[in-house]
Length: 287
Image 1 (cartoon, helix red, strand yellow):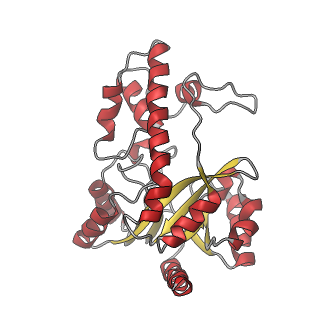
Image 2 (tube, rainbow, N blue to C red):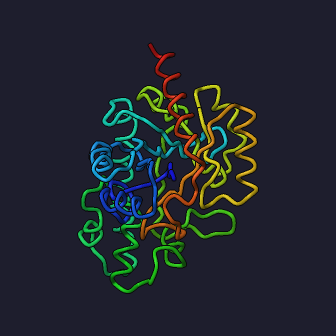
């Protein structure tokens, strides 16, 4: 059983790297991609822990990108990236810095609105991580009794992006994301295989032909947010453009929007072989 989309506490999972790997072993997962947001920190540790516990770790990343042509977000997974590669760091570190400053601003707005939390109380949930996410802020609010779950009415009240008859959240902060073209190119430069994550979430389907031209190699078909229609669309695009079809749970532990078991979106072990073939092809064309 494989899972090709999983986060750890390095970004926005409530569980540490070791806790995630132990849970994967318990669930019968044999191959696990660690794809934390915008960073490869922790990948070497994950690989070593995977060897200890008998799980093959695929070193990965999920880059928070933006499709400027269509004015929508897009997440790009990278499989078999080189941990610590300079191209990834140079592209993503400014994004991490922007997210951190936005989180500082959001917490300040929440305090100003009368919620009795502190920045230090939020930070306690980020130990070992590379920044503060909205889930960490919500965890602090949960601990103070303002809500009994991470997602729901309070989350919308604070962080809603607005639009489509929704009021913008009182703590909302916009962030400048990475250009999707740059994300795909950096993953390839780092020796990785770029794959479009959960295209149904941001309705990225129409952009696929364009992104294939710049090096997109795969598309995530199975994902907790994909219904049959989204799976069908993604699979058809994969067939049309010779893309590797992947699947993963996008596991976030306690911080997940949906309760999902690791390994439950498995596309089969042959997916690993296809990704390795693409990685070899990328390597051969770059030398």
